[in-house]
Image (cartoon, rainbow, N blue to C red; front, side, top):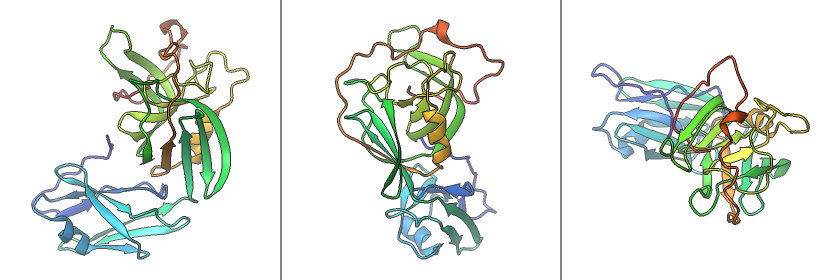
Amino acid sequence: MLVWPLVSLTPLSAAVVAVPPPPRVGVDYGLCLVVSPNLSRRAVLARLEVTPDWPVTLKRWDATRWVLSPLALWPPHRVIQVRYRGKHPWAVHFATDDDRWVLVDLTHQTATAYQGSQAVRTMAVSTGVAPQWVTPTGDFWIFRKVADDHMRGGTPGTPGSWDVAHVPWAQYFYGGVALHGAWWNRQFGVPKSHGCVQLATRTFNPDPQGVPEDAGWLWQFTDLGTLVEVRGKTPVASPQGAVPPAQSLPPRPFVATSAASSTR
């Protein structure tokens, strides 16, 4: 579920508008365009100009929203400008980061942050439990970041459901699947989640001694649009401990910033 602000088209507005991008993005960032239903993909592409000249692709997301993405990756360390040459012209721009990306290895239960071909940091993780909650494999990009999230899912009151406040450093890359801190997890390196990629964190952790801040570090390393590659095969593991006990929730004087349905 891509989370872009909803932009309405009116008879007096442009037939194509861009959802304002963040100032800095990853090299796999997709620019959201809101397009009048009577326009074709070819007609929109014919009116778009990307500087520097770069191969792009335009894919439909829903009835009115399209995603303009690089055919491979945006060039790093560059300012990308997108112009629309229509009756109501506009232009937006964004800066790309330094070719950062994240490799999630399901087989070895690790996440490695890369800058180009150079590995910067490797962290133990807990991905989804097989066979029901396996973390999806493929190439994705981070489309939403929530510093203090509230994750819930399943049918309330039934085994396998979850409702967890104060999940730190959540970075969504596929629907409700995210990289995030898991302060309740005391054994990384084995699958334990409902599909998300859990990382060690001191944030909200009632017993942070000796715990690395992997989730917070990765949050600072990435941008919206940072590439996330998920590879490998999930090893068989017990789902015990996938849901933290309610009594372990630390008291906090504030509420979570988001209550969107998501995995853990």
